[in-house]
Image (cartoon, rainbow, N blue to C red; front, side, top):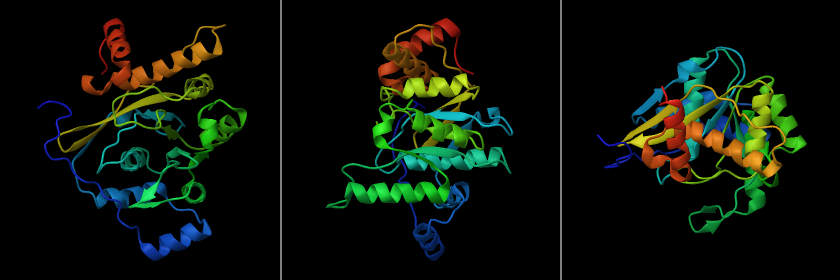
Length: 268
C-alpha cells in the first residue's frame, strides 16, 4: 500500500482531562505529569499508531529529539507530541519525562469565529509550561535561538531531563526550512555532548507512524560565516529527519536527502 495514502484518516480529538482537578491545577499552576495526561488523551483516541526505533533511546541520560511538524485537520502537531511523550515514558520508566520546547504565544488564534488575543495565548502557554515543566521560549527568540538566555534555559532543563523540538515551527508534514538560528542552536547542544535523535512523523492510511532514527551530531567547518554555518546545520538536522520519511514528505530537502542516501546509504 502506498505511503501517505489517505482514504479515511481519523479525527483525533482533545477530550477534557478530569475537569475539576485539571482546572484547579491550571489556575494554581500546580505541577502535573505531561506523560500521564498524554496517555489519557491517546487512550481516548484509539486509532492505529506505529512506533519504530524508540528502543534506541538511552536508558537514563538526557538527549534531544528533533521532529518534523506534521499537521492536518483532525491531527495536530500536539497530538503527535503527546504520542511521542507516551512512547518515551514507556521506553524509560522511572526516568524524567520528555520536555517539549513551546512557543510563548500564538498569533491569529480563533475559537470558532472569535479571535483570541495574543496576550491570552501568551498567558495560557506560560501557565501550561509551568504545570507541565515545558520549555517556553519567547517567540522573538525563536528567530535567533542561540541567544544566551534561551540557551541557558534549555541547558538547565537538559541537565535533568531530555527535550524535544519541532524546529520548523509550522507546515503540514512536508519538510520546510526552519527559522534562522535554529541550526546554530542545535549545533551548540550537539557540541555539549547531547545526542540528537531525528524523529519522522507521517501517516500511512489511518496509521500514524512515528519513526525514531539513530542519533546524529551537527558537524560544521571552522571559520565558516555564521549565516552559512546556521544554514548548513539546519540542512543536516532536516536531512536526518528526511532520511526516515517516505519520499513524498521530504519537501524542500528532497534533493539533499537523496544525496545523503546515495553517499551514506539508506537509513536502518
